[in-house]
Image (tube, rainbow, N blue to C red; front, side):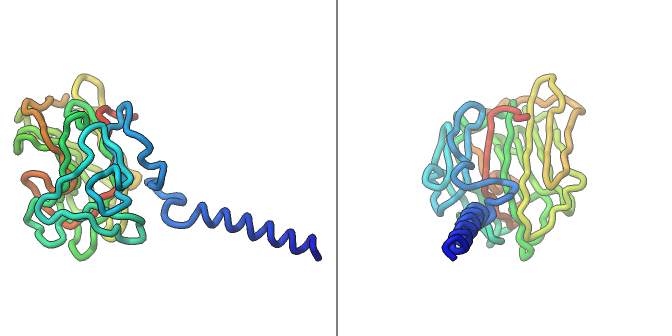
Length: 253
């Protein structure tokens, strides 16, 4: 009898350990989150923000940075509880003023590189706002329509990376089969680089990766000062949530 009880106890103990490790979205999620999501910002990783708490000081909210650590909310941008079963919080933009400039911004010094970089973030488009082409999720635009890097929604269910330098015209790449649906979390990874190495642009979302090789990018001729999550600068302010952000100051393979 003691052997049977011992065996039952061992089975329950193992089951409890497995359950503890696999509760919540961290078990098998696209973006891992949790205590290991932002361990430290070093090397090419210059900014990371999981948004675990309602706190714009990112070091208090699962974040790290090689520069600015406190975001500034503009217009109606806020941090809200992450929807659809995600833990923690998320940047919420466009909920009440679809024509506004909702964003949470940071100083770019030591964080952003217009000549070469990679941005990764999770985003969620609520059905009550709908998929709105032109909605900005990330942007750095020191001079409107002349120097900018943007990640925006495109078409009816796709996403685009755009780069322009020195008023040289837009270079951009757009997914063709991401098939983004509302009320669903997605991870997007966007990369850019000037110089002769191809591809010059890359964007990946929902199993679809597209690259751009048509022409070399032109670097900014206006010094950037801030970057924003949401609609920074001219553009459309569709309803969206953003979290689990990572930014590198180089192209990440």
